[in-house]
Length: 184
Image (tube, rainbow, N blue to C red; front, top):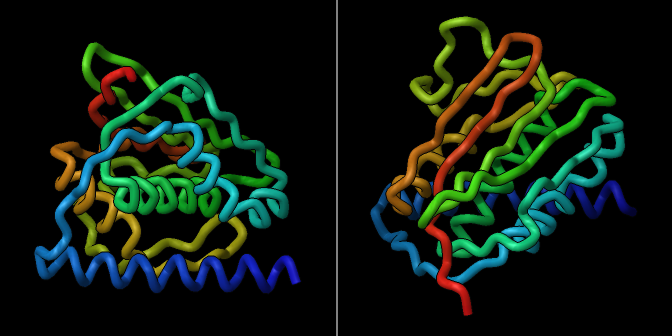
């Protein structure tokens, strides 16, 4: 029952991605920024992938996110984080870790999702690839190839960009910036 529930959540996640992408392509999506406690939205995103995390024996570390409050569109940020965490799980080797952390700056926060996976080949730039191409994960997981495209689109709407650092066979780090929310 747990596997069926998670499979249906993942199918819903894919359908939601496709719908959000199509709406974005029609320029119908405009961000509605609000104050968001980062730790809660991250935990919700991680919980969606708890079964594959457990199956691969992965550990997920949240570093320094507890007191961080950002200003972003909630649905778009959920989609961004779900896609980055999904990829981190998909491409991580068994019994390794995924580290999610922040670097606070004066008026913004850098959010970093780092996996311990297969990484990218030297010279490979996944941000310039056709968006419907997807590599198999380390446990032969399949994807739609649309996730990073949506991430880039939604970050663009937040006046941010996606940066990628990778070492082949060691993993990838995806990072982006969001404005800090004013303290209440």
